[in-house]
Image 1 (cartoon, rainbow over the protein chains, first blue to last red):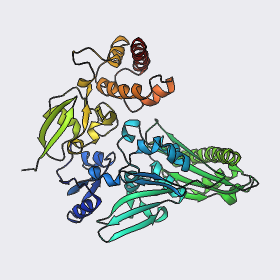
Image 2: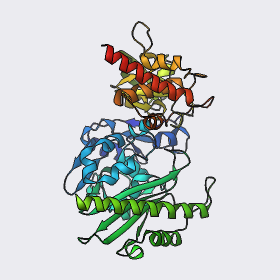
Image 3: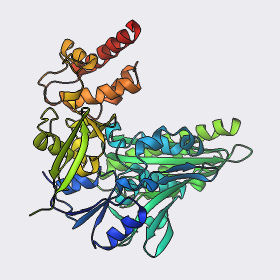
Image 4: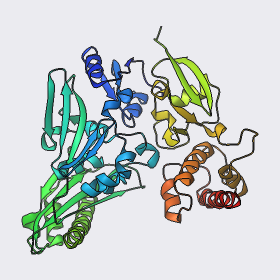
Length: 287
Length: 164
């Protein structure tokens, strides 16, 4: 298993990378390569050129502020996972990153690369979607900000156009009295999940539930975000919210799980994640 | 004729140079161009962990990295774990003592992974050990001796620290 031949450019700046991509129609951007290189080796992809952005230091950034966490295109999963500042501003990031493959993969793979790869079974697209985050794309024409809702178009398909490079992703901060949790079930830890869920619960001043949302992976062509505020009610009826999810989804069967099993498991994990997110919100409200 | 690139990198503390096409995987550069066949290649798509090496000290899959991307970086392979005089490292000694090698195919990946794991987490819990080696597969025997080896390596390392 060896990759097919391809043209290769190793730009040192974003501008050089955009120029190299413009000069190589059909070229692919290589960052961590933890999804792209297997695709090349298995010859499922044969792009005419790779634009290797690993030397573009300006993209190796991780910025946190009151508004949220902005992750540059070269920030590896491991860096974001270890960042205490990122975890303080948006705890869901670290909670989800621990489920992304294995440590050796997280040392190399990038957060933005995982989003651009748009695998419906991946964790980070569901996180970006449930938080209502954005992806910043650059092209020779300029920059645009793409909301998560518009970014994921289908399995392994995102909204980046030819000649565009995703330069960063923005994960909004957790608002006050808001908790989160992540749960997934995989045949082995680190494998692609059969189904997974990121849950976010917000409480009011009176500690009653004012918002409950889930972002699901592995059960639809793109991350599925559901607003469960009405289903859960202000008292937080999590079994009712999970029942609503089970009725709402239409997962596929594959060799690992039947559609019914996936639906059942999604309900179980949803209830568990919502409960944990509500407990987290309560903890944060009392701090 | 396919275009080739000059690739200069540091492997086990030594400057090495090779010419290879951009599609040369780091695992293949180490084995074929540099003759370092200690790095084993199992699945070639990032699942088995046999080809794990240290890139600037951090474990990575050498089959999931282009050699050209590794240019300028420091690579440590299993050949670089022992002392310069050939004395096995504490992790290597522990694997030998506890029969953690078994058939030996997955061993290079385990040794590199565990070397970094114990550097970052010198006294790992059972759960941290299991999580730390979860990305490395043994297909011949099982993990009991390997897990025992990791705990023994932690002991040997702490004895060395304590004795220093």
